[in-house]
Length: 252
Image 1: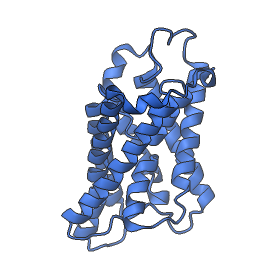
Image 2: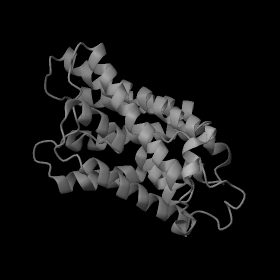
Image 3: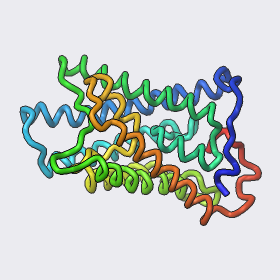
């Protein structure tokens, strides 16, 4: 059972060189991802003079996030596991693949990476606003919560199948592109309704810089619930008992 492998860790992990290197890798990967993803939205606003959202804009957002996440996961994979998402880190924790202490270190790095990326975008664009995630007209918080739970379930399930499962073999080499693809596809599905975050850090950076917090809780609760469900489902039904006996708990 997934929950039986949960590990707290010790405070000494905060000072370990490998943990700090992994956190730095998460910070850099998140900065790369948010700068490209949020930046593409700001570029769209500049090109359209803050015009209304269009299908072409949604496709552009999908592609930019898919491409950027593919790169961000790839460059961090050999150092930190390439989580680039507090929800992925939480799912890995629920499955016993990272300790709570190391997970908190990842969260801090991921959140800081997102904030710094948004600050850099504000400077680079001459003061343009980094738009916070928000609900579209006619979309309630409950609707958005369901979207975020289901979309993040799909994302974390993909992470488990391609990156965490010890049986994945050569499939692991396509994990970054599979992860990028599912995020891009989910943006096409949910972007018009709630922005399709699936990532608390991606929502956090723009919210801090623009100081906009309306319905922000949705972008934490949905992804964390979805990731926990994905972790429990995959660990319970698809992981062979004893598969992790030779693997360290600290990372995947």
